[in-house]
Length: 164
Image (cartoon, rainbow, N blue to C red; front, side, top):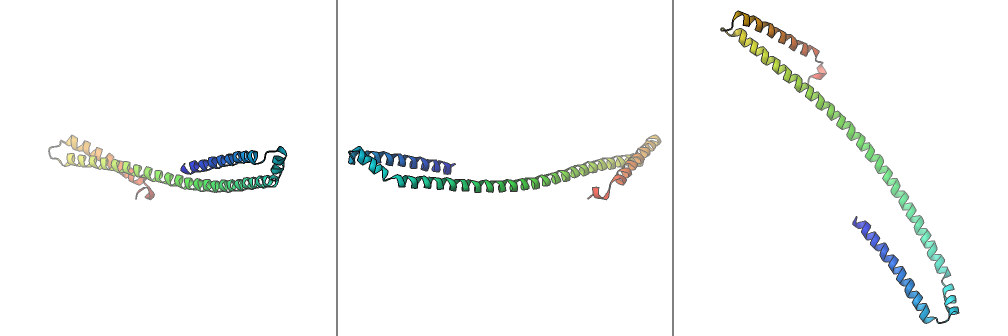
């Protein structure tokens, strides 16, 4: 931002300098050359200088176009590099999401297995408790068996790749 301000300030100063030089030259010509024919002859002397300045301005214009072309080329290369980096970042993000989903699934499975183990322990306590009635013991054995079957199904349903 400061660089743009400096360039704008320089351009403004150069424009003002040219206007001042032009104005001073007009005043000097009026003061030192009193007749119009002398002024016209003096002005004709600067035809070659005028052509030189026009050629220099044209050369600067061409140079500016070349610089802009190079800058556009560099910007395109940066855009291509940024696009490639964005694609890499997107791929990494997708992989991270997949890993996170797998971790959530494993955590859910682990929580489910822990809950089932807690139920099996609870039913084992009811079965081994001497104060439990025969009916409670039988019901606890059936429930424990159902839970153990569910655990076996969960384990059988897992692939080796699902478990780390």
